[in-house]
Length: 556
Image (tube, rainbow, N blue to C red; front, side):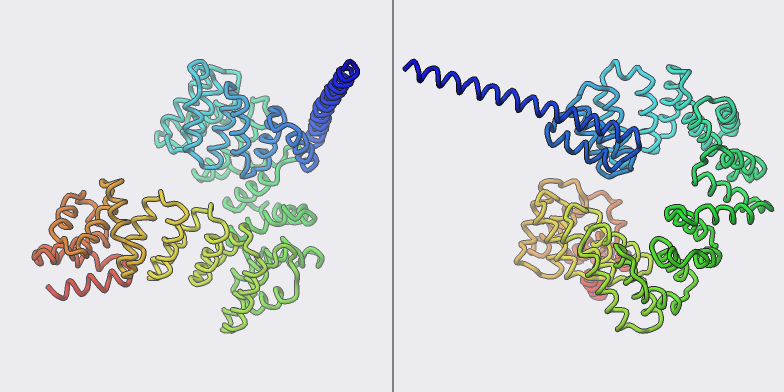
């Protein structure tokens, strides 16, 4: 027994020692990788900083410092994940005003105004008395279109922290866009003061950019060129400032424009990102012919690879050079942008009347996209701009089926199908939406009305219409759908009662007016029905609706 006790005790000691050693190793691992992440961050090595932070969080998901660094990294990279990381930071540190305000700014940047509102509402009484709070509240108000609130918030931030030029800059910018000329004059004075005297170089440069923009809007070209020139003369001037200077020189018809443009073309020839920005700027300035000539003057190794190859193709599209586009796109390989090349080739072939070959190239473009979200979004942008309705619907269906959280695609596809009169595929889409989220009352209501139009009784549209109405009876669309379901069931007077209880403004809608006219006629009020039926036929309707309303009007 004594030996057993000694053995068990020894084992316990060994296990404890092993556990302590393991815990020590995990702590050391976190510290080691976090130190490496900080070192990489100081060197600007984004990739290795990210990989190091991943190691820290793999060892300890609750490491606040690593999570905050990941949030800062995502914010600096303008990543869609920045908001998610900011939320995680606040979960780990809910009492931090700084982290809460950072979440507000991330939400504003992502246009997630609900998240921004919730975050700013959580600031405690003490936090609401600080300059950082008012500065961020001003940014939120400005993004939400509340100019007066933004102005008041920035003014309070500037009062509380007079040594901080950031709220002074924001306040001046808000006042610059007001209609009161006195406010504008004071804003210009404040911006000029910051542009000349501010020791913060970032604020000073931004003040000059705002003054350039204001001068261009006011057609004060001398001032615009002057401040733009100062921006470009700064050490390591951002490329965007070079482009802003080109705008000022071109709009003012300054003699230096041609030389400045040529200098920009020389300076960016080895930088793909600068090439892209300059070419897009030229196209935006309706100078696609000049952009094309310049791009074709670049070394062949640059021309035949993205982004230059893509930009050349875009210029050819703007110039309607379909033969040149076909020749270029047929002989190149664009690596991860192959789907774009095949789409451009499809456009070139279709414009020349070669529909069969164009269809084949488009099919390759879709296949190359491999149902990946970003390529599909890019293809959607192309087809929508080109007004290729069938291809637009095809791309949107691919997004809806493979990326169910991309709710915008559902809305876009529904709009496309409605405009095209595609009631049957619209029913398919609405059924998919409702099955994915039965709590979505809009989907339930729209599914009900579409199913009734197509007599798809297997979907039980009467039940769907009643359920949506009972849950939100004040919604005019739901009331109209439910009233139509009662009409179809022979309950004409009940249907009429519901329609007459709706907000009269709802009857300005073409389809709602049509359903009201049909129900009025069924109740023997043909004279009253006629104006609503005529109104409905002037709007956009599904084919089944138009046919029904026309027949009702003809039968009066």
